[in-house]
Image (cartoon, rainbow, N blue to C red; front, side, top):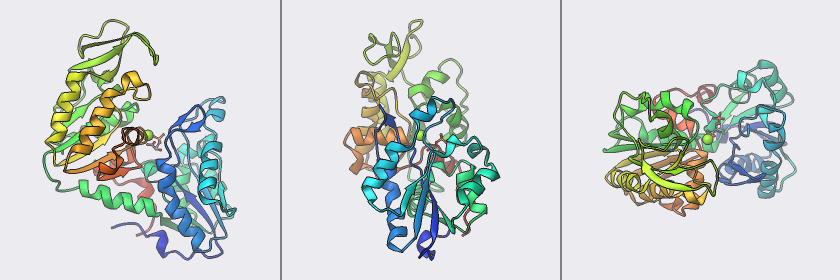
Length: 347
Ligand code: 3PG
Ligand code: MG
């Protein structure tokens, strides 16, 4: 069963609190990829069209910890982008929810602060639905809660990867949030016919592989002498990285092998880049995966802020069956977990 839709809510004259996932990749203080912003607009437009008096949009941005992070993760560039897209004074984008330390603890006081003065709550933040935080779960207990259009569309599309899928089912995983993903992959791996692992994830499991399913690791890597865009590089075997060097991309043999396996798949789910693709010297592995997923004629899903950015930068977005705004959230959904942000909304 899907949670009840915002389309069924009477919002005329109401103050609506919307939780979107506006956690976009930033670069030099700019929005580096606006997929999540664009994907959040239909719900906001619906509320405006249906006469909401005020639309308060909240989201987290990054994982701010220190005081300096407050400048780095301020909502300003995101707010500007939303305002430029909607041009409606009834819309107010609130400051980064994670600037309040209560947010990630699902602190009821912070939930009350967010809910204060609002008549109803719309959760459209699929990408954050796996987090039980004040802005995703706490507020849903204080206000009548509805699911936004994006959240529902994500649940419908990703639902196709649950239960019976066309096989071979290939999962490709990489990216930086390794600790978050290992447990999920452990459960998910059993459902797939092959799990290809690259990026930081592969680096972290090189010496101590925790997976009980057969994970396909890189055979070669693009090694860098230091963590820098213009670092000296060499291609080395995956298990023979010179001391002190860093594997920042998968190597050419791995690219071919991963592409071959993806080409033979009927269902593909890809989350997380194969390396530091923001730097051209380490982008080839991620681009190769993006192109292989696009060329595959099965049902293909790409999820996660960075992978989505890579798919756009590789110019192959139109050839992916579903681009999910959720990274960790799509992984946990696929694992068969009930997402707290979804569970908090009545059916
Ligand atoms: C994401 O980028 O996956 C979501 O926005 C959630 O971010 P988080 O992993 O920092 O909670
Ligand atoms: Mg992410």
